[in-house]
Every structure is written in C-alpha cells, then in structure tokens.
Image (cartoon, rainbow, N blue to C red; front, side, top):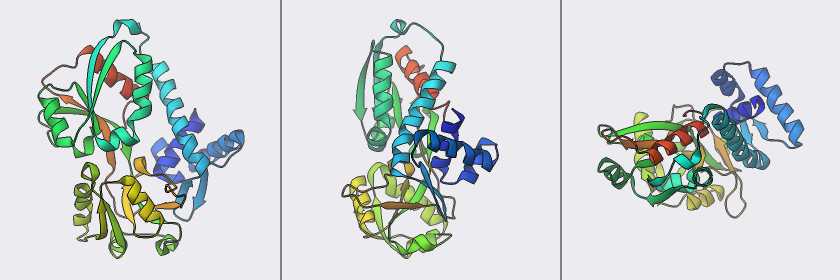
Length: 297
C-alpha cells in the first residue's frame, strides 16, 4: 500500500521531491518504493525528465487501478460495516460536464454496485443551474468543480480531489528544453483556449495575476479538440491533470510541464444545501465518496 501511495503522490505532483515533502518522508524512500513496485509489475511507471517525472503509457493505466485499490482499502478500514439493505430511497445527483466525463464514471458504477437499493437520478447541468437546483432542493447533492462554486452562502461543500494545472505541449515543442517556463513565456505562444465548465473564466484569473493575456488562436468547448491541436503543434494550453492523457486520438504525444507561477488547481468535490439536512441516500453517497477518495483532497 505504501508503494501505491508513493506512486500516486509522485504521479500527481510530477516531482518525487514534492511527493516526499507531502508524505513527510525522504525522497530516497519514495524512489525506492516506486522502483520496487516497477520491478514487481515488470514495467516502467514513471520516467524522469529534466522537469521531474511523467507517467509512461503503462503508468497512466496503472494509476487508475492504484487509485481504485487504495480507495477500496480505505473504505474497508474506515467505513462502518452496516447492513446495505438498510440504505434505500432515491438519490438525485447533479454534476457538470468535466466531472461526469473525466471523473465520475468509475465511482458512480461502484456506488451503484455497493448500494443497489438506492435509485439514482443523475443530471448533467451547467454550474449556475446546478447551484440553483441544489439550493432549491431539486437536487440532493452535487458532484462538481467546487473551485468554481459561487453560492457559498447557501451551499456547503466538501473537497475530494485537487487536480494540478500544467502546461500541455507537443512532443517537439521548443519550450521543452527550458528548465523553467513562466506564464510570460506561454503568452508568446499560440494558445488553444478551452471554454467548457468555465475553463476560460478560470484561466483569466491566473493570467491577470501576471499581467499577461494568452494569444488564443482557437477557442473550443471540446477537450479532445484541444488535445489533438496541442499534439499537432498548433498551440499550447494549460489544463488540469484530471483531463490530461499522454496521447491524442490520432496517437501523437502530449508533454506536460509545470509552470513557475502558482497556477490554482481544479478542485472536484461535493456540494449540498446548508439549510437542508442530507437524506439517508445522499449522506451515504457523501460518506462513500469521502472514504473512497481517502477522506478528501
């Protein structure tokens, strides 16, 4: 389990040294654990670059399995062993595009298998509509980007996952030779701007902090379009690790680099009405997600 924890931390941070600090252990212990895990699996999970570490194809595949394994163990250890038949009813969940497309599927499937007596009504909504329906009681709970949450007076939230934002570049991009890359450097490049789930609005915040404006050559609501265009060398982008995949649909490599400025993370979490206590089904879903994600991000 330590090997899995160390691997997940290193993969998510992109730096073994950062993972060691977050885990409060030595860097050599993290390196040794990951090497032992790779030896047991017979594959390379991480490869070193001048900017840190990045996932191999096998590593990207194994990361999902590792998260499921650690979540299942946490659930077994920390969740009370109660009769599942006692939990029933209807659960109305609201979610947003990015969360339902790149985060929710495996947890939704596991929850349904674990609690078959709970009937789930799932709605994908824009954030504004989702917040409104939560506040009005039309939804029991939301699984959304809580980093975008605005109605904090009426809605409570719980953080599940912090997903770092990093620079995406084509495999032959000239910035890859740099030891450090700043937002000012990125501002000189053609930029692909994603709009879905208020991505462009979020981007404006950290661009304004450095007094720069990205040179957008294309604005799109499609993550896959961004992925293909970046891989083809049309432009660069800054997006979260949650939606990152190392390959485009046509098989071209996409590289990641961390920026020197503190770009805010994209945070996934739960939201519900402050003045309305969670019904049993919603409370069960909240406990399931919290335990599965290790008690929050």
